[in-house]
Length: 445
Image (cartoon, rainbow, N blue to C red):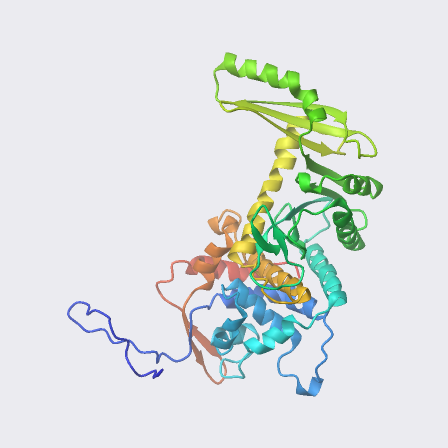
């Protein structure tokens, strides 16, 4: 029995007075910050971009919830921490989520879980390809002016699954079945693309067409842009290197150590070890560059070796690049090592926004889910991008933004000519919320 008038039991008295609590507060929401995400959505138009890629088979005169409205609702749910589609059944009547979808609090409820499930299974392969292109267009439109060069960080991440999903594969390293999608971010943390794939190391033959589609889509927006591809040794294959050279794309990739490469740094490792013993410091790091290549490569390439010697011995790493300028140390430390920020972006997308919730049976539905979570990433990124540069919120993680700025309680009062939101007087972040709402209007549209 769920009687709203029955008080909660088990609450202790305070100051000699009994505490009576009932679920009779009326139009209340614990997610008033979702309205800020709605303002970001109005500028970026993520839901509209994705919806245009889907052919809606429903009769227009019988449609209650448009595809764009459903996508927008789903993305805001994910951004607010409700990544499970079942949560739609409880949030569809939330007054704040209704307002975020441009509906009155007293109006018709939003889409239910079953409607969301049908939406996720609606796009086909061709529509998903177009959707991937739309995500690249969204990325390009997020700049106020065309940059001279962009850096694309490409990486893959393991996504464990527990069912009979299409494309799932057993991964011996993780000892689980799962996917291993390839995700792409730029150097500033903007989301560029994601591709669902089996849980295995990507081959050069698989990476090359993905790069071709990605670069082609970017250059259709910016024909003269310089592109630098940055990735670890998983992506250092002859097909990738040859394609980058043939298409005027710069690259800086990790290289797995080989006997041939180690011969080039054997003397440097010995001299660095001697220098460590003489200097009595904790570590000594030195660099060397040379031209060499694997037997499968079509030509020799510029190789940079980083030799670091410490108490545990020598640690040597190699990278390969077609960049002609730049010193070895600067290319390694200031360019290549910054790809580590992509791990934080993946964490924001996968952990804070639950992008690993790929539990649909069909691979197309799971690919669409990656795009939905990518859309939620853009909403959170836009919220963070609107922060003052010197504010701690400008570098805050998404879960911190959610806790501090989205999970704010509000009482919603709908009147004849206006809707009033009564927010907590004790809200600790009301000042930054005032500032960011004014700054969201400056986001690129």
